[in-house]
Image (cartoon, rainbow, N blue to C red; front, side):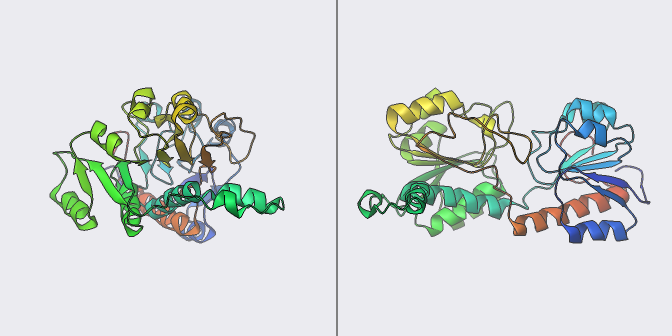
Length: 330
C-alpha cells in the first residue's frame, strides 16, 4: 500500500497502445503521451517528466531510469520483465509491475502454429508455391501430431494453455512433478489428462516435442544446453515462445546439424529491441528453424486484454495500491 495518488498522472507510452484504452485514461484526466517509435536508445531523452512509463518490448535501462526525475511507476504491458532494469528501479523505490496471464492464449496459439508448421513444412510449401514450383511428392511426408509426446517446461498460464491445445490434437503431454504444486493446479493437470514424470531427464527421454514457457531468470538462462539436447531423441522438436536466452544457441545449432533437432522459435538471444531492423542470426536462417519475429502476444485479442490490465494497474496506483509488482516495491 502506498499513499493514495488521487489525481492525474503524466503517462508515457513507449510502444503501441490501443486508442480505446488511451481515451479512457484521458477521460480520467491523465496526460497521455503516445510515442510508439521509441526504443531503448532514445527513451532516456523522452522520459523527462513522465510519472508512469508503459512499455511492451522497449528496453528500460538504468540510464532511462536515471533520466526520469519524476518517474513513480513502470508498467510492462505483458508478462516478461527481462528487458527492464528492475534493480535500478528498486534503488529509486519505483515499482515495476506487469500484466500477467492476459496474452496466454495468443502465445499458446503461436506455439501450436509453429509446431504444425514444422511437422507439415508449411513455410517451405509457401515459398515453393510463390516461386511457381509444385512439389506434392516432396511435401507429402509428415509424421503428424496425434499420439506424439510433448513435454512442457513452465506451467504458468501460457504453459497450461499450450497443454490444453496440445491435448485437443491428441498429443500426450508430460510435465515434471513438483511437490509444492497447489491442489488446484494438480486438479487442472488431472482434468487435462497430463502425465507427470519425476525429473527433467525422464521428460527429455520420453518426449519428441519440448515446449518452453519459462521466464528469463538466472536459473533458466541457457537451460537448453548441450547436455539438455543430448538427452532428446534424434529429430525432436523444440518450441520456444518464452525468452531467447533460455537456449544456448550454439548448442542448438550443433544439435540441429548432428541429430536433426528442429526448432520453432519466436524469440532469440540477441533479437533487435526495436520493432524493425536488420537481424543476422545463424539460428534464424538454419533450415531446421521455423521462426517468427517475437509476435507471440501480438494479436488484437491479446493486446486488448493486456491494455485493460494496464488500466487496472494504473487505477490501482491512483488509489494507493501496487498490483503485480515484480521488484519488491509493492
